Image (cartoon, rainbow, N blue to C red; front, side, top):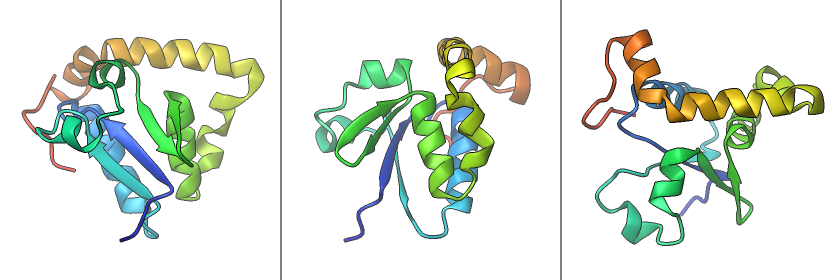
Length: 128
């Protein structure tokens, strides 16, 4: 069985989150990324070491056996599909602090932001 280089643990009820995962999945021709919905009924059984409440507050990813978080997950994912240059500035020391604060604001308010941008705050089970 193929083992991805990165597993992203995402919120499957967040329209904007699922939209980004869909874009990544389309770009991931080499299947380097695995996508796991933290709200799937069997998630806790399959990933008992992932704290669902924590993963619901900040994006989690598993890479090389280590958990990574927030924009580090985003940058790792886009790098794996050859688009890391788009997210690299968010990891530069000068911008990192500001980008991380902005990400945490987004993560806390993602349903309201989704409603504003897509007209839908949540989806029962968005399709990836």
